[in-house]
Amino acid sequence: MTLERYTQPAIGGLPRRFNVARDQSAAVTIGGELGLARWGMLAPWRGHGGKRPPPIYVADAAAIARTPVLRRATRCSVHADGFYAWAPKRRAFWIHADAPIELAGVAATHRDDGIESFAIIVGPAPPAIVHVASIAPIVAGDVERDVAWRATEVSTWFADAAHDDPRCIAPLGNPAQGELF
Image 1 (tube, rainbow, N blue to C red):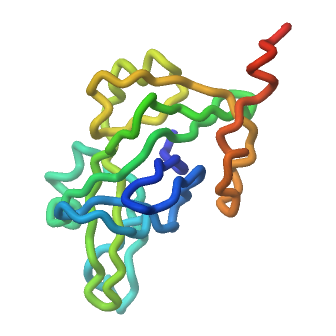
Image 2: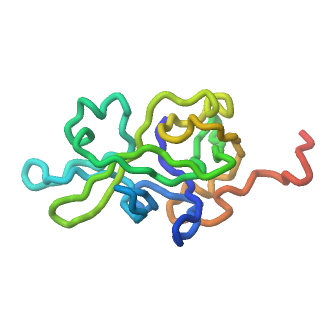
């Protein structure tokens, strides 16, 4: 399972995001400065024949030391408060914390056009996330601290990258009424 979408709290004057998708701009802190960067880290250089290598969306924590582009990247914090995961039978869940979190990331600025981009570092899932839902993707960062995690079943509305509104995280059914079956 891969991390393909996440949610972001309002931070530093930037609006709340209900659906951050790959290749979109999102709030990150790089070198102590909050700003926007593209999710999908681009290598700072051009590849063979002047072409860009494919973007890196998630970086395995174990691969950072042995992968030159990741090893040379700047560390960053990716601001989030949840992420989406798929369960069997096309059931969708929003795995979310009771407070904003910071995911570990790596960032680079492309030499040719100055595009700042980032990737989220992934590693073994903390027990808190594994306990909430075995469907959760594995993320690294500030998830070890004492954060209450919840899994809320949601519609597939978030699956379209153009949808960035509260319907993305709205619980299925009527949570105020409770479920009868």
